[in-house]
Image (cartoon, rainbow, N blue to C red; front, top):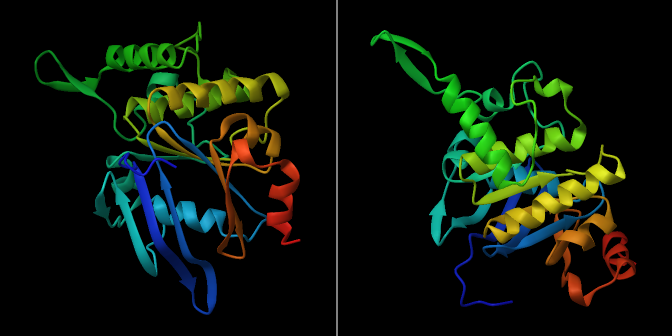
Length: 249
């Protein structure tokens, strides 16, 4: 690992305890620009606690999070988003009845003045953002005005990624992004991740699908009962070794 590069994200000795339960214990990792780090482990391994602690949902019991070398202490997920950490959860949190543009600006709608004084939605800005962002992801949707409920799983995933990219996320946390998709759609998402990587963003990729992990990641960190069971470069490990780390065999 090249230590001369300043990591986008550095997590040092992070712990999160809920009463007597140590959901995460003394966990450290770093993510460099243009790097995909996979998190693997069974349910209860601590993956969800980790991403919720990084993204401002939980506050750590101990440890430090640095973003581009600066210590951060998020009180809310919005603070983490403002600093460039976007989490794309499995359920995507899209508003089905709205367009791509409206979803990109959900909760941060751009306004303009009509007749010089009346605040109205800036629909052109929303449509332009949708078109530009989708083009940046090399994702071409003909119906920019259609509600996202009309789209397939892979297209919806692209909208969620597009929203993160529009707000200039430096770190994207992707929680099981291919779980509910068919094979062609999974390939499309893997392709989107490669594009984000080429743009120099850092990605935390959580998946139960080892094939996807091996297709997209540079490194894999295996968690077991809240602690790091092992970290490997993808180019230097095998599916079997990862499974052994996960089960502790």
